[in-house]
Length: 128
Image (tube, rainbow, N blue to C red):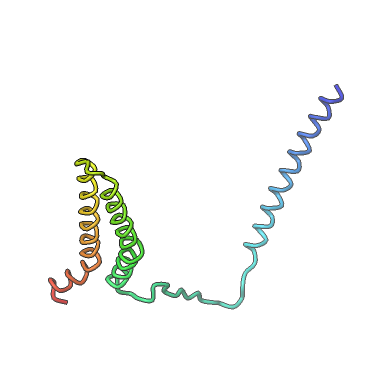
């Protein structure tokens, strides 16, 4: 019986503490919102991209993708294809898989290269 009474009291104390904490946070938020400044200040935002031209942003993004992601992946895929070729031991299926790996790596570099120069190609077609 004493254990049950203590458990009930602990639950009620937890509830009171939770109510007190929520009330204090509500009051703190009200006090923070109540503070006003008499001087009018304007907020100026700076452009983190340092440009207003979308094609410059797109070129920078595509150059990053090409130099930092595509080229290292291409080197890795060429190495994987070469290892597959060397370990194929004349098995036609493994040789075919190694050739396909090398071909797909080359196609990937070509597609990525075209994607990086796509904006300049489109600009030259449009005539700007």
